[in-house]
Image 1 (cartoon, rainbow, N blue to C red):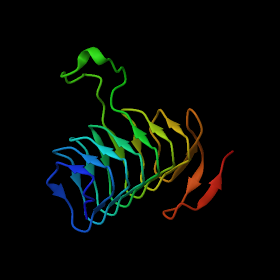
Image 2 (cartoon, helix red, strand yellow; image 1 turned 45 degrees about the vertical axis):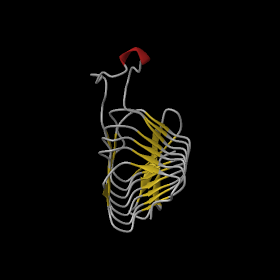
Image 3 (cartoon, rainbow, N blue to C red; image 1 turned 180 degrees about the vertical axis):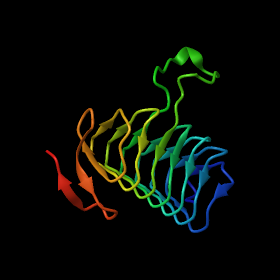
Image 4 (cartoon, rainbow, N blue to C red; image 1 turned 120 degrees about the vertical axis):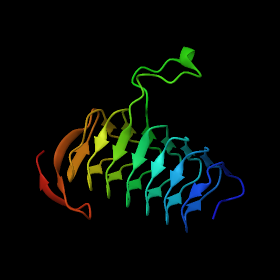
Length: 164
């Protein structure tokens, strides 16, 4: 299902994926099956999204982001891709572009910002509003700005150990 107000140029959208109002999906983006993309989301062309991924409203996903299967991306999350952005490079491919990988089953809380070049481990849980500036190990609970590891979670997101 693609809402008629959305601008979807990609031909690589999996079965049973829903794309809601005012979403932009650029040519070349790959979205898996059974995904749900909330309204006002932007997905650039060199993005890969796995199966069963939930992307809530107002998410910005720029080139170089890979989101593996079964992830949850909360509302207002921003994935950056350039460490030193400058407008005078329009049309260039910046050497500063760095990919982001969100591992299988990870959850990223509302209004989090994920810095270019970061890997988020499988089943990790990023708290709302976190600013993730370095890699997050699998099964970690991270919160804050900059984000710090404060505990461990299981595959369902239950906190199994708290450090702070």
